[in-house]
Length: 263
Image 1 (cartoon, rainbow, N blue to C red):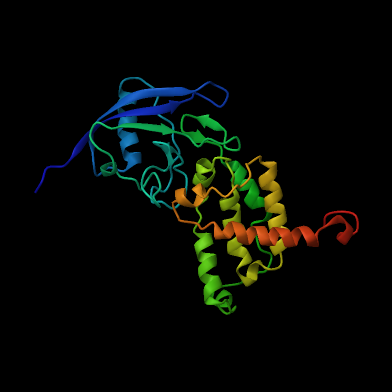
Image 2: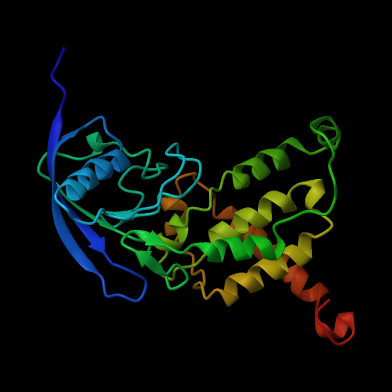
């Protein structure tokens, strides 16, 4: 059996004490790192060394470490979540790197995601977008009741694909305009494609897009970097679907149609 491969790396990490402090890159050695470690496990090891030496550990967000929660938001060597396609930072393994590599690690870069400390950003803007319209008022009851509603297979598949979005924000970090269109369109689409989502369909898209604009995310100019960087492969087709619904909502809720105000 071959010996375990260990790596000696240099990490160039963005350090920032708090939201109003100036930040900058600081270099740290990462020695004898097992190639079988996940990227976050590697950071844990580096942090243990920093704490032992009396230094401040690198702050980064994490939770499930199973690629489900979307919390591990960091840009690794210029790409959200690192060099592997459809992989979150917690699923990224150190075998993706070579001995002697210098790895640059920084937080999401977007005005709507202000840095709180080191690699931690405030992504509550996504929460407010969901609160603006990501709900349904039609009760579905138990699983048996919900399953009694007929849904075309194609719609069900598309809805499930959209619902796979974990809200990590990689699409925003990858977009040159820091647009949140892929995230919002995924949340709009997975409800718009199902019968339970029809009562609020057009109010939902109107309100969620309005909240997205209020959070000062950038506009979409069809670069496609969002889909390429999404760890769940959310399709930009959802953006087209959302734009169609938003156009309908704009016509339905014109002031002259609803009698002097937005309905």
